[in-house]
Length: 436
Image 1 (cartoon, rainbow, N blue to C red):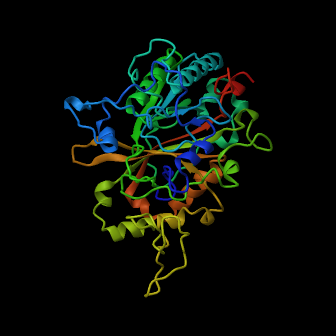
Image 2 (spheres, rainbow, N blue to C red; image 1 turned 90 degrees about the vertical axis):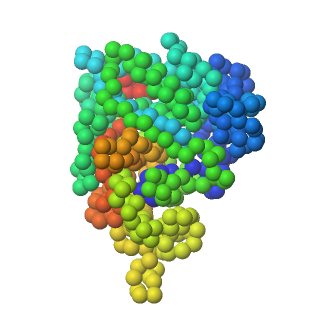
Image 3 (cartoon, rainbow, N blue to C red; image 1 turned 120 degrees about the horizontal axis):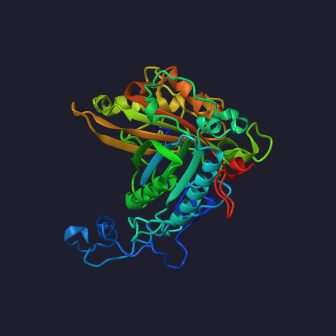
């Protein structure tokens, strides 16, 4: 997971200004007009105020003098665009992923109406506005907080709607892997929604609105919650860490790379995919439990050998800094490879997998502690690629054959979803499929 799980969160190579430009739809702040949900103050954000301005903190978590948190709450992502939001943006502090199954009797017509409702709700909430109907006011005092809402279709959706001929070959079910212990009730689904934001209330508000919008057309199949480091939590931009304490995502593909689009997004022409997937991508979603009790019994040196990178700064064991190219042939004084043959970072390198790459944008999760005191925690792994067979499947098959990390993780749920391109102004996500 160190090189194939979590994307960089505004690393020194991708500063905030560059990230904004690359995201193709992120504005540094929400439009000048104040909406009902534009940022008004900082109640509940005492830590940020204290760290940034040294304000005196009062009781009940309320600062003595409220200061607008324009650096977090006012960030806004555009809903309309070539690609759906929630793919190119950096890691968000809070996330929800939820799958729905169409209700009995619901078909193509009901699905189109649902996607139309969902798209309008996403547009409004991402702009910092209230939901169109029955808004719960949960996020009344917050700004957009980089909210993104992303929609996808599962393999079963196409039979349910009579659109089997439009189902992409790339959406064929994933093969079985040796580390799989999958719970079918928490896997797959007709429809998939990814929600991310830098404020927990904003994210929950969106989740609740999407659920209510489903009405009688669809029911929740499964839902999971995740989190990442909050923006500004470190003194300078740096790669995020996972729950194993490893810097995670050093080699994530960057939009500045010349072949980025062809590896992540379906092209507009010359593709095996149907036309309605142009500008879209495929999301692989895996709930990966980390066996933390076992992992934490290892020494730091043993953990570093499993990953192939230093725990302190993410640099390869062959030397240098985090971004230094790993020397796979370097040996120590005894002639042993410095980066072990089964090290996770060695196995997942694109040049060790025929150039296979995927854009990872996951969340950590913690779902409590069981009766034996074992934490149910790990990674909501989400990766994006133009072709899941060349991306995720290629790398996971290689990991299956001898990844040292496999002993400390367990894949417990899985899903593959076709995520079409972004909606045009006045349109909705999936319109090309449902009205084509």
